[in-house]
Amino acid sequence: MRVDLFRMERTQCLYEDEVEYNLSESGVLPMRVDELLEGSPDPEWLRQARLKYPPSRGSETLRDRIALFYGRDATRDHVMVTNGGSEANYVVLWGLLERGDRAAIMIPNYMQGWGLARAYAGKADPFRLVERRDDGRRRWALDLDGLERSVTRRTKVILVTNPNNPTGAVLTDEEMDAVTRAARRAGAWIVADEVYRGAEVSGTTTPTFWGRHDKVLITAGLSKAFGLPGLRTGWIVGPPKTIARLCSYHDYLTLTPTYLSNYFAEIVMEPKRREAILERTRGIIRRNLPRLERWIHTHDDIFTYIPPRAGAIALVRYGLPIGSVALFDRLRRDQSVLITPGAHFGIRRYMRIGYGGVADRLKASLARIDTTLLELQRRPASRGRSAHATSSWSPSTACVFRSCSPAWIRSSHRKKSVRGSTTSKGRERGSGATRPKNGAQRFCLSSGATSRSRGSSSATSGREAASTRKTRTCSPPQVTRRS
Ligand SMILES: Cc1ncc(COP(=O)(O)O)c(C=O)c1O
Figure (cartoon, rainbow, N blue to C red):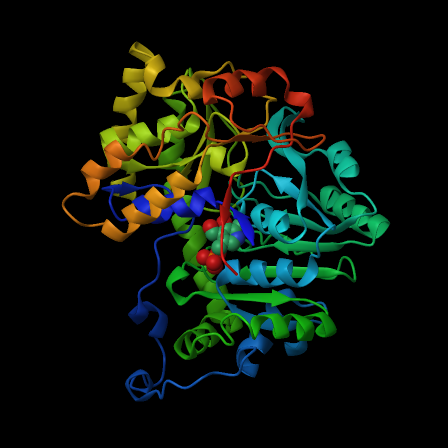
């Protein structure tokens, strides 16, 4: 089966352990085991635990506690525990989508659902969050007309990420209703990735899609709002019959959660503890965000910024003549700082900054970004180095996915295997991994029909994307996998 390259994850995997400052993380500083076990009656259990298989759907206690997080008649039968939110998304889309179906997907987005929908259904239709001014305040708003256009009677799944990654936006009640109406009209499933729910800046937990429509599947987990990505605990909440069906897909994957994670997750999801942990997350967000914002506002001449409502992520639009992937590369190579380029989320000329880490390190990493920004303001990126990235830009031009020929992917995998070796850095510089070669595919996304341009030089297609934006829904590059 062919799958698109999941650019954000692949890139993060390659570089996150190499750089001095990693701002590509979207969660908060992870909790330590001793913090988690604080108040636990007998931590000795950990040493004595027999590492057997846990129940395949997760223990009853854990599923009961997860169900409580959703209320509205959710019970343990509505819950299945997975290995991470990403496995939850995988199982859901694998289980729901057949070739010929369509999935309508909110953009910008963590693009896992986009890649999976294209792999299993063949097509994905974007609808967008757009920058809008409401009551004098700018916010990310759902493009309701775009939603209407994207959801047709062939739509099997409407995928929303709420709170959203990378914007940090939270849908209003009216927007959630619009999604629900569209799903009812099409007889489609709403798949709501709510992995950032609980990490709100304001402290008010985002309303869930659970209970709004009879065909709702929630995916979530402990990696983001709970600050426990290393537990690799996720879950799916849905109608019991569908959950039972999805279990038979999980049987072909990882069978069960891990025994220790299931146990830790029981501790986390005990309601009082759960709220205390979410409060820890919000505390980090509330402490760090103003520091980041002070820095952002020192760049008001080049940045446009809508504050996130949830998640330890801030999305900044910049007015500099350099594409987001080229900027990402430059910061990584010159400053040893990792950000996430907008292109990895389906949008151009944005960078996402993760601010949930240690505050002092945030300050130091932002100072390094300053150095590069200053250089770019003095001397724009050279044509030869990033001609593809400096194509004229209009804010409404949606997204650029670039390149990734099979050679790119092979070289990426090679690099991963040599990561940490003394030669790895030199090899990366010369590998061309970030520079599309002639013949590399170039892809972009915008509302409308689907097309793909092959074989064009990246600089040319960059201009094309800007000038013919109405026609393109482009697909990211593909990797061939043996099944
Ligand atoms: C929206 C969204 N869903 C799922 C995931 C993956 O979660 P996990 O680490 O639990 O697999 C991420 C990770 O960044 C995400 O941003």
